[in-house]
Length: 128
Image (cartoon, rainbow, N blue to C red; front, side, top):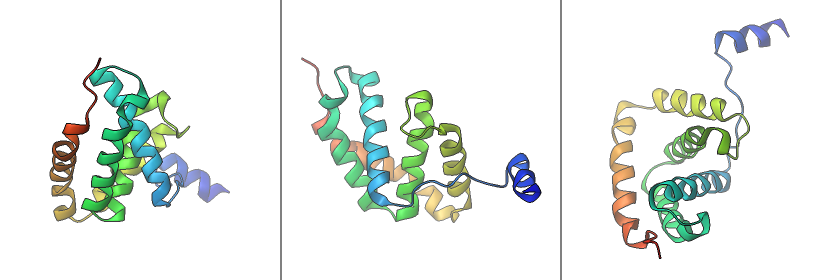
């Protein structure tokens, strides 16, 4: 118990989050819909098509570790609106896992994001 407390206090223990790609998809699409409401208006359901495309592109573009980092990072960015109660843990885990990846993988994050946005932009909600 003392070791667990010490690890938690020193920040070495990361919370455990799902390692299921289906869960990553749920997290990523949920966050995408909420962010798109902020950018484009409408309701979360208005952004389902765009966000499903975005999720599929991110999932297909990289490896599972990159997909996980994007999904956890998205939930961390949502803060109190996150599906993950410990959104700070999600944010910190995403940062730690991304930082532990090879530099070539990290360098590809921006390209993955840009390609997903450009590919899916025609599906974005345009308002009423």
